[in-house]
Image (cartoon, rainbow, N blue to C red):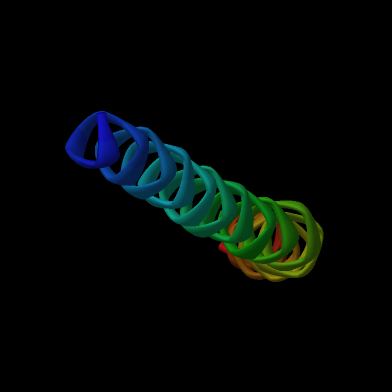
Length: 55
């Protein structure tokens, strides 16, 4: 009985840690994906368009 309770607690803690780490990774991936795209896109579109217009 004690082993079952210990396993249950361990599994719950493990699930919480995994969920928290996955959620943190999602936030970390979302922020760079959302912030940099607008900057790189502006840079990428600005340079190629300027280069195309010049040439």
